[in-house]
Image (cartoon, rainbow, N blue to C red; front, side, top):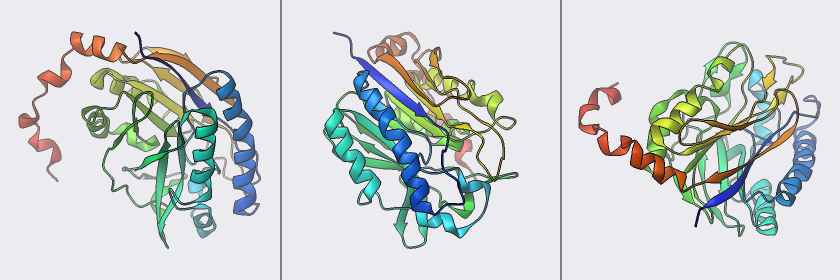
Length: 289
């Protein structure tokens, strides 16, 4: 019997004025997402991932302490608790990327993974933190992740998470595969003119090299007042052969849905024995400083 699971991705623009207070902005983004999540449930989605720091703008376009106020604990903060309730209500695995406060003044770019019965399974903290001109001042906001590359056994499949800039580094993508990921979600916030030419190259390459599914999510629209570029959407799923299964629009809020057959992973791996034929004994130079 095939393990076919309907999965979803949500890409969305920011409806709130960044000049508002942080809680007003977070509420506006949450209010936008809730109907889309309900729609996902109605369409039979069993595993869902949201975009990077889904409940705010991409505030890393400036360096302002105001945005520290938007961070909250995981799993004890209100957003994780709310999504635990929603996951249980809809019997849906949900990956929830938010800004995490670990300790006062210590912040991470994080995604919580919640099982279909509402159980909090754990979190992934973004490992690679860019500081790129113009407008990607992430080291001002995020400490590099320190939890490694965990995977999470959900009701439907084993899930890994890799966040935005992480996707440029194949080492972590490999680690997720070796740790048993059957699907890797990559919630992102990336703009045209910078990385768009890589968007449909790198992650299918990770899928091929590691023979798992990938769900790539990008927000849409222009975010004032920064206007660092157009968040170009085009969220997609690709299969373990690197083939695009479905691709979202460039400029519209959208729920992307695809039926993934997780039995395909074994079929592909039995054809291409990349994990068998690896030579970790020959790769020592890769981890030298």
